Length: 159
Figure (cartoon, rainbow, N blue to C red):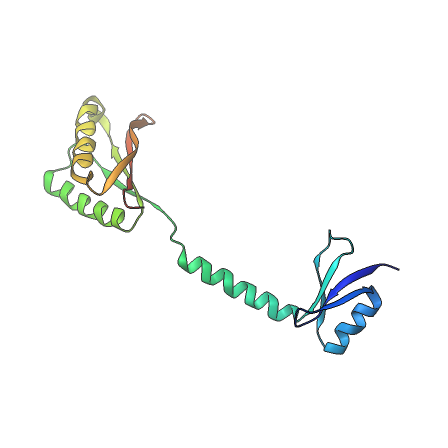
């Protein structure tokens, strides 16, 4: 007959018992017999309220999720002929995202004949870097994504 090491509801050792006897002990306490270390020799079982245990475990997981901050990537789209004031508005928005600890992806989209002016898009992204250098750092430099998109990624310095 298989034997298991049994731990009582208050954490005390009840000894190595046959499985049937361990089940009877759990019924005496009106609790569940839960295997906590199946690879040990002999396997370790604990007498506990399994429903209460699962509830407390889920509460702890929810609490730990509240404390962690997930970093999201915010995208700001620009065009090669974006005006100065419009760019300032977008930069204020990007500054807010970076202060929250998020990453910001700047995308310059080219349409039609604008593809002939890739240097204008590069200038806009360079201006973005200059304006946000005190709060953000370049994580991926300026590069083309496909034929019509120029992108750059900024991350927050105070992570």
